[in-house]
Image (tube, rainbow, N blue to C red):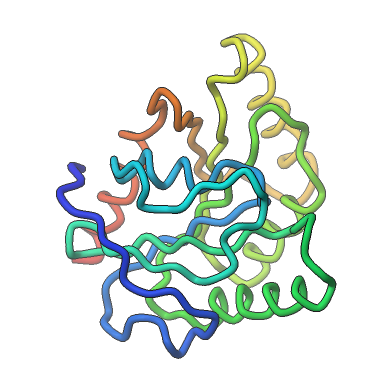
Amino acid sequence: MKINSAEFVISNQEVKKCPTNRLPEYAFIGRSNVGKSSLINMLTDHKNLAKTSGRPGKTQLINHFIINKNWYLVDLPGYGYARVSKSSKAKFQKFITNYFEKREQLVSAFVLVDVRHDPQPIDKEFMQYLGENGIPFSIIFTKADKLKPMALERNVENYKAELLAGMWEEMPPYFVTSASNKTGRDEVLAYIDGINQTID
């Protein structure tokens, strides 16, 4: 898929205020320091489409971007904020779950995880939530450039082994990416394009 256009549409905290047309949506979510904004900018080939920040938890709204005029990339707040109050966490969590449970246009979620680390309980719990609610999702391993090839392969295999030993009978689709060198960009976009074609 070639990205010809990528435009910001709206930010809000209420599902009912999301775009009303029926274009398919792909939601990106992960822990607050996983490199989500950098990944979105890399996928769309727009340096500042999603705002990056040194402060985890910068995204605190549902952000819609329309891509090629025919599908939405949705940038969701990270879970596991380090620097917000308990009441703010509860509010964020509520509108995130409202989005996933009520948004009919949602086609698939992408759960971002830092490939440098062992599986984190908060990531596994969120994947379990998606599975239990019948929400299709894929895993995007980020920051692949931070590891040497053998360590990268080992970490991915260890991650797969832990998921399959626990709650999953088969591994969800997954992609290994790097925002720095565009690793995985073509694969993620081809996956979205393939789904869009079945919808059309």
